[in-house]
Picture (cartoon, rainbow, N blue to C red):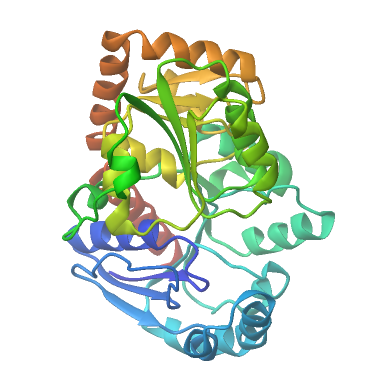
Length: 373
């Protein structure tokens, strides 16, 4: 079976490469069609091919900010039209992201099963026009994959998808990060920290509730809180909140590359994701791969990780007091932390393993090919 995984903007290289490797290991002929990821190294292609088809002029010029975005937009339509010819070599085309849905619904290649993984069913704070464009894109698919039952419910309600075209396939745990070939140690000032560390990791955005965590930080005892990731929101309000914690918060405001990630995860006593809203998060599946205890907001697919697999404690979104109480309780309860860590490890090698994900994904492809035949 010839499969093309398509991520034009390279939004999720860890997911793309992990899925490609798992499908290839299961016997599929896999090509990942994407663009150059400009923020750091990506996993080595293992048993599959990579074609950097999209935004080649933008990648060559590497313009920052709005100039780079404008050049990508100018390239998007011709690149999508050229991709129609590339897609002729595939039996199944599986999109990971379609970044301009108002155009993309009209530019898809014909005459082969199309699958879309809706990593985020609806963008955060969407406009009405965005929702309408997403309805057109998802309506043009033979199948839409979501990562949890709450996401499936949301997709039916907001996108009008019929349940027979909607398929729940979990996100896989990013275990490749536990064996990166040349891991980078922590910076010296972080390596010198003693005691427990609470890690909040990933791009800094408003919906991730970092301000809620920092409000809680002033009352969290016996641990440092590290907020690590590239800021996509103003930092000064976060720094002001962090100052109330009396030096127990460290903010590392930069993109952390794959070789650096293991040191941060291995040092963490627990990982906290205090999101206001989410469907699923790659950071969660990184923490699972490292067997880390988790404290999560009770939103989206996070609830399944806690309730079905026992790998996390849940708190109401936006509730700094509840977050404080749970963090303090766990920091004083070693057996509870170890129980969460053990559950995380079991989940990572079981339902959230890439082998399980690839088996379910290939079974979906086969059903679509049989229906098309």
